[in-house]
Length: 540
Ligand code: SAH
Picture 1 (cartoon, protein in one colour):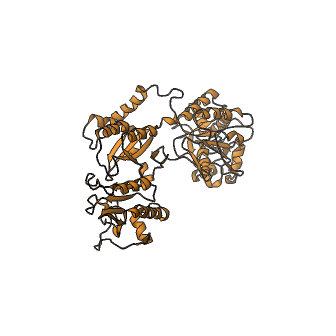
Picture 2 (cartoon, protein in one colour):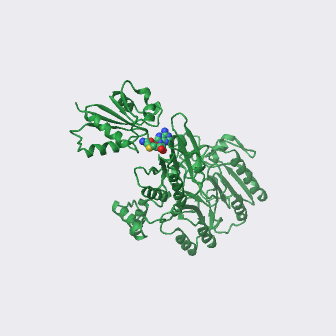
Picture 3 (spheres, protein in one colour):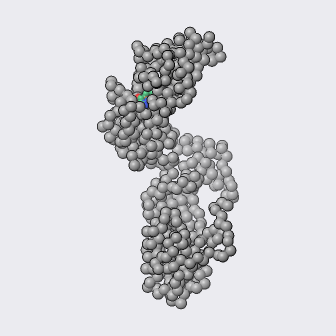
C-alpha cells in the first residue's frame, strides 16, 4: 500500500480558524508528527492516532521520520501552525523526499493543506495593516545566515513594504529584533505604526500597538508576530490601518485632501503609474489626443527609461518615499470680473503645469490644474506673481461673476470682489456656486446657480436653490428684490453660514433649502417644473 503525507497548516490555533480539510486530514491519518505545543493545540481533534512529538526538537529529523513512516505505507499527518508552507514543514518534507529520488507518480502521495498564516491572523486582530504590498521576514538565523536576513530587511524597508517579522525573538536570540529596528529606522520615521500580536486566537492572546521607536519597550517573544507599517499606515481608534494605495492629493488651503472612493480610481490622480508615463509620451508624439492608448511596448520602454536613463535602479538609499510626488490641485482664473488671460499668464501656466501635469477648462470660468509636485509653494508664488486668481478645488464655494460687459457696467464689481474675498474657497457640505451678474439680463446665468445675485437699478435681487444639473434642472426661486448694496454681502454671508452649519455632508444647497424650508427668513417654494420628469443619474 502506498503511504501518504498530509502536510497540514492548522491556522493560528483556535478551532474556529482551522479549515474543514485540515480537520478531516488530521482525523484520517494514522500518525501525527509535530512539535509538542502544536499537538496539544489540536488534541481535541485526535481519535487514536499514534503521536510522534517528544524527543524531536529538530524539524529536519521530524521530516525524515515522517517520510520514513509514509514509505512504510502509513498515512502521516505533519502539522504546522499557521500555513505549512510559511516557515513550516512543507518545504522540508519535499527536500527530504527529493533527496531520496522521490517522484510524484510513483512515490508516496503528498497533499499540502493550506492554513491561515500568522501574517493574516495577526493582521485581522490589528485591523487592516497588510492591505498593500507586504512581505514576511523571519528573524531566525537558525537556517538562514544573518547577513542575508539583514539585506532583506534593508530592501523591504527601502521599498516601503509592510513587513511581518516572524520568529522575532527567543530566549537566546535577543539581538536580532534590535538590529532589525536599527535598519528600519534608516528608512522609516520613528512614529511608523507597529503592531505586536502574541498568541493570536490562542489562550493568552495579546494585541499591542506601538511605533518603530518604542517597540522594544514592549514584550516580544517566540509567539509574537511584529507587523511594521509602511509610510502610509496609521492608527485609528485602536486599529492599525494601511490605506489601499498611495494616492494623495491636496489643494490650496488643505495640506492633504483624502481622495473620495470614486476619485481614487481615476488615472489622473496617479501620475506615477506606468500607463500614465506611456500615455504622456504617446500624446506628445501625436497631436490628436483622442483615445490614444500606449502600447505595452511603449509602457515597458517608459519603465526602462526610468530605470536605465535615470541612474541605477537599486542602489542603497536610491529610493525614498519622499520621491513619490503629491498632486497639487487648484483652479485659476484671470480675476473675479476679468475673463481675459494674458499671454504671459498662459506661458506661466504652461511652465508650472509642465509635461506631466493637466490643465482642464471647466464650466466654472476657471482652468483646473493638476500638478505633480513636491513644492506647491513655488507653484503658488509663480501663479500669484503673474496676477492669476487662485481657488481651491473640492466641496468649496466658488463665485462665478460675469464680465460686467467687459467692465462697462462696473458698479457692482466691488461687491462681487468682497464676496469672493470673504467666502471664496470656503469649505462647505458640498460644492456651491454663487452666480453674480451685473445687470438684469443676467446673461452669465446667475439665476441658474445655487445662489444667484443680480444687480439691477442700483440694488440686488437674490435667487436661491437652483437645481443646476439634471433633466429636471430649474432656476433658483427669487426670494428678495431690491436689496440695498450695503446689505447684500451680509445677507449672503449669513445664508452660507447657515448652510455650512446645518447642511448634511454632501447635501447640495437646493436639497438643503427644500429640507429646512426656511433660510434666513426666506421661505422655500416648490419651483420644480409641473411636468414630471424622471431624474437620471450620472452616466445614464
Ligand atoms: N507556519 C507558521 C509560522 C511558523 S514560524 C505560520 O504560517 O504562521 C513561528 C512564528 O510564527 C512565531 O515566532 C510567530 O512570529 C509566528 N506565529 C505563529 N503562530 C502565531 C500566533 N498564533 N500568534 C502570533 N504569531 C504567531
